[in-house]
Length: 248
Ligand code: CMP
Image (cartoon, rainbow, N blue to C red; front, side, top):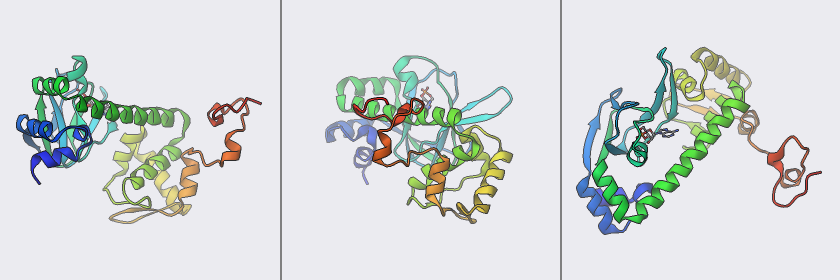
């Protein structure tokens, strides 16, 4: 597929006219990053925006003791590196290749020129940033409101939903899960064993199957109430109040 057509299938550029997408494809440069290479260093000045064309990267914060918290794992069609181009602050996190990855790189000047001349980019950018804020809200909620089994259950549901809703085929280690939910590898291994023993999931070499979605959703604190209960307000669970239903 020509680069212009590929770019149009990426949400950031989806609202652009064909001629604008073709212009971007002339600005942009292709770069390959081998697995484990650091693409962006936290605190560096930002000079480029990156779009993932293939492979997968992780956006990560690394503590003084070397512990990592994974904020996000952008893959094909996702972009990163826009924050420091927009607010002129240093890079907010490291970005590291989790697999050999092919990226499209747009330099700061070209990105700014595109932004001023192509309003469609701003729409794509705002949508993507809203999505990220929702994911960050979800993560903060999970860290504060859920125990580790709840956080593991929520992550497994999210990963399965990226696939067919019932299986996770992406290779994911207990260590990686721990870094994604803010826990330790040992605790995650214990939790996964317990989920298998209770028949909620099954784990094979190549995939994880969700055997009991309902139980996982309950553990993950997802709202499984029907509409009748939604309007009941008990003073503690404000989130169940909808529309003009009066508090009781
Ligand atoms: P920038 O700060 O330029 O460099 C690091 C990039 O990581 C940042 O831009 C964003 O593109 C990305 N990033 C930072 N925080 C998050 C987050 N919470 N979720 C997804 N991506 C993020």
